[in-house]
Image: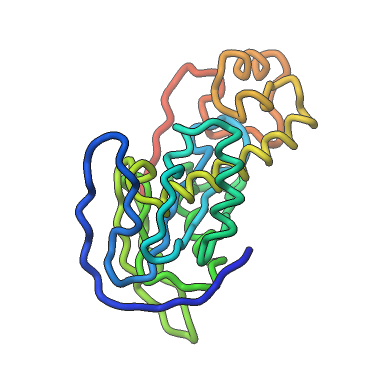
Length: 231
């Protein structure tokens, strides 16, 4: 996954401009190499959770970028090519269903983001994350643990370009993965539902049982609630 090098300093958050139809902001911290992170597949009954980390050029603008959920499938894939071409650095991290069952989906989503960050050859100086939960990312470099500041931003994929870009990469790469699994298990309708808990998906679980890709710690038939301890 391709990356280019950059470095700067200082850290003053920019205010977010409110209101529909406005361009997303290029960064949250001024004067820092900033990575945006987001995940895809957290609410699914089957499949891995994917996350992406993206560093965009300083003062980058692309008025087409938005939260991946607000875009058509065709537009998401068009933008994926543009993001990968324009990004200073990008990477995708994956956490498997087995790992999700072991550590829970909240921790797994954060681990997927950390794995994406691990793959960036341009080390970020700050991180912005979609949502309201994250664990500090502290890479070890030459035997020294580095503390990288981070900020969580609710609905950040609709506010900041790098988080929007990360949401698009995570979503499209996970969709590709679920489409491959759908060829192996067509009865679960993963080609359409991508592993999410649709009526057809749950009916297939009742009829055929689970696959090696189902998250067995989840309430697969929809008759209870999943708790997410965060440590």
